[in-house]
Image (cartoon, rainbow, N blue to C red; front, side, top):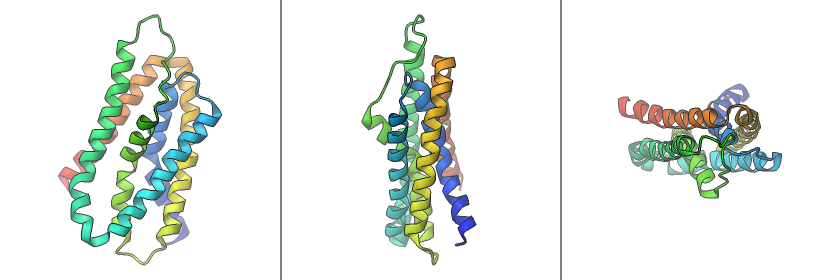
Length: 187
């Protein structure tokens, strides 16, 4: 696999995490740079591990992974997105900024939900003559950088648009989960 192909793959695998971290940054009340980096690291580590898991599973587990990964991603992203929309709609009208939600489980659930497609990519990479460690590291690094930047961008969006940014972010997560589900069910 060429270096350019690895970069394109890494960026492609990172887009869902970018969207999720941007919406997370918008939902939190002025997240700090440290929190943005922490979020980026969680997304990056999870995104780097999942193709390794998929690759290790290889051919033997590909049928099982393909049968459930889209449902898991849909469920996790739908639940997190739905919770964000519900929270934004049920907040008191006088609350201008979103309430902070720094739940570790929510962060990890979102990271796992956005990275399950990388596990499927890992399974397909098992059939190729590639250095999976280099590819996983590239995916993890790209995801970490994009998620950290997304969190900081969401911070600016959230400060201006608060509740609306949280609703859009939640709907985006639900849409990502639904897209993953539809793509896998129609294939």
